[in-house]
Image 1 (cartoon, rainbow, N blue to C red):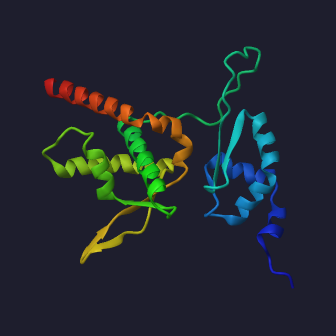
Image 2 (cartoon, rainbow, N blue to C red):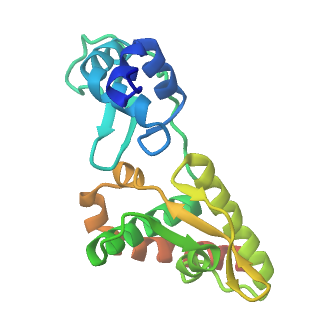
Image 3 (cartoon, rainbow, N blue to C red):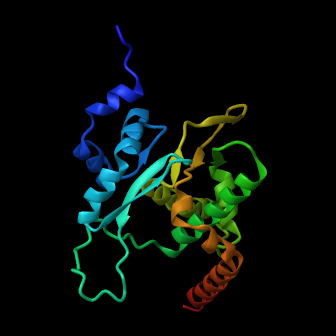
Length: 216
């Protein structure tokens, strides 16, 4: 009797079995190796299929993720039909955008300095990333609660994954997050190269915002 393998189980997949999960979100290799293998085998057909819908498949085989995004419109092609967007854009608040940029920078530093592939940060480390960019507050608990809401939003977006708490010290557990490598697809290397200038802009913006709120 032949044991089932990834190769012979992917024949059970058709286009709809691949496109529907992609329309719902990201496909990760680590979550479903068989589905991932089927996508690799049928990716050309998937690209053609979603292209009719005005979408393109973004697939990073090295990092092990794939997702759909709206195809960029050609600015000079006025004759091209304007399709309604199947995937809505999600405007992000300024602090959430800032935290995403800081996590992307942390991921670049991690990749440059180590051999591991999974960047793990505990909540306190993420709070410290954000702290220098936020106005000083006398209420530390309120500051942490505020940053926690940004973290939760990024978990919801799929760029952070909350892991099981680990024991940090006797009687104390730490909340740990994995920075998902798909973040690299949304904050590319060129954008990252200008990050220091952007962070300076962030600090100026926040300082100005804090000044206005204090005046008010």
